[in-house]
Image 1 (cartoon, helix red, strand yellow):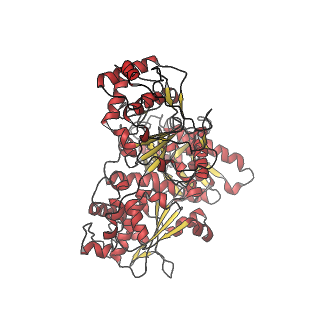
Image 2 (tube, one colour):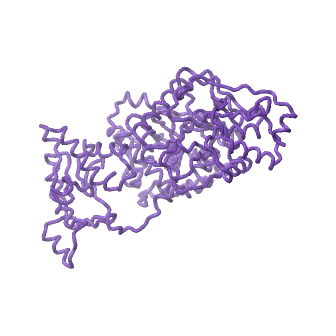
Image 3 (cartoon, rainbow, N blue to C red):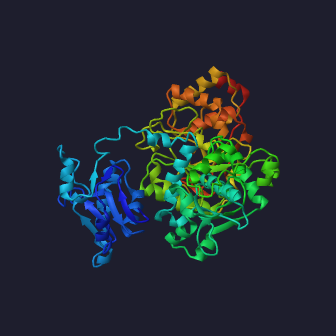
Amino acid sequence: MLLGGMYVDADTECIRPVDYLVKESLGINQAMGFYERDANYIDGLLASGVIVTYPWSPLTISLISALKDTDWGQPPWISAGPMHFTKILKKINAKLEGRDYLGILIMPSYHVYPYHHSDKRGPDHMSQIFAKGSVMDQKWGTTHGSYGRSKWKREKTHVKDLDDLLSLYVERVHIPGLSALAKKQVRWVLAKFRNQASLCTRISHLVSSLAFAIATGRVLLFDWRTNDSSEKLYYSDFDDIFDIPISMSFANAVENFGFSDHDIHEMTVNVKSDEQFLRTLRTQDVDRVYMQSIVELERDDWWAVLLIRNRFYRNTVFRGQSSDAIYSRLKKFMFSPKDPVNAFDCNVSESVGSASASVLPSLQNTLDLPEATTACFVYLMAEPTDTSIQRLQRSIASINKNFGGNYPFLLFVDQFQKWQYLQHLVKNRIYVVELDPAVQSTSGVFVIEARDREGLTYPSTFLLGHPSLERFDYAIVMDPDLHATTRWTADPIEGMKNKKFGFWVAFDDAHSEPSLWSNFLEFVRSKQIRVRQPGLVLTADGHYRNTTFCRCFLGAMTSEFRTPQFMAFVEFFDASDGWLHEGKLLAFYVALFMQSADVEFFDYVNIEHGSFHTPLQINIPVVTEDIIAKVFA
């Protein structure tokens, strides 16, 4: 819709040519719409099934921009359909007084909606449609439940194969990344070519660039302009060889966004045939290395084989598929069947030998390099409101200002759509993971207090064992209303190296949970476990001290919280009386299974959260053996 033309719902049947409607509308207006029934129906409710607009019209930009603030819990006709359209149109009309050239023409419904969904159709309804002069017939598929119950949305959020991956890439990266909302922080990867490159090496480079775009969540754009400024690949025109989902040239994108040459220069990093790039592909979280808005790639080979072998992407993005399988599927996705030069039979091999050496000369030098430590900052977002989104933006901005680190941020949310455009407001990579409210499992959990999860139907748990965190060695879990105050003197991820747990505030809580302590004693006695740090949970004279780790800033070696040991620990308390405060439960686990050397105190992290303004550590008393035996016997 942003690119102009006529938007039509999929459940619409075209009866006659629509040319006269388009000409009548766009001669003097920026857009044309239709009443759903008439001006008196629901205060002039407009139909959203047929909309005609100029490219990048104020109406379409407003319609799409406002979706980030809509209530996705409402029925579709309210959240993104006719009611949404009607409200936006009224706001625009209020601002357009005296500017007729920007007007929006509203036409009678019979042109495209000859029958309302509440109307009864007779056996001769088609003749009636022709008699009315209608050009289309709306079938009201969603209203009448004609599509049946679809599992598409649920299945698409769980990537099973490369086809799912490609569908999600187009839906959640490519299309939003070319919308007007992405202008503040675009994320593009630009595939360029050398003039002397052969057709097969150009194709390998294009397919590699698509793999890079999918792995890094960037829009893939192409630039192969020659001296006559036409865009061709070998002897083929741009539009002849590319399928619609990704057919977007760099020149068109720059023009649509209104970027100047200076803008492009400031936003771009050029990556050529340097060995450092190959090392990064093989060993690093690429987004931490290339933070620029536009990554310009200029190579001639199937270099994505290194990205596919990188453990950060191998299973989480590419689903453990072989390099050959990925190349074949991505090439099929990218190129249309037209193939006018009949030269798309170029093959690649992931084996190390003469074939791969000619494709990727530096492959041997990068295969066995040690892979870098990976980490992220994690937020659990309970409610997708404007306030919570702004609060999260402030938190991320303060961390970037006072720390940097270029680490990605991972958000566990209930509604993906509300958060996806955050990626285009900050430079860090944002991973948005939608939790399924139907999931009731508590295996391998990192507990979040129930009172802080307002309105959520699934358990108050934060899944450190979630598949989206498997790619990260360490995670820093934070509250979204936390903000950094002054410069941090050290990197908390570096501080976590070879440690299992980290905290910023630990204190003796005045609020006691007697049942939690009695359950802990039962666990220790039934499992016959020796408490490694008794002073963490006991006073010197053997009383429970209610030790609590504040969950506002916690560090974790993620593999520790996927172990059978941790799962069994949590499941024991789940089966008993449960708990209210995760901080107390964590203190039990650390006291039982970790030495003091396994725990990092983040006293160099300068943040504020609620009443806490400085790091806080409790004193660990010496508890004698006879006291320990008396308490836990």
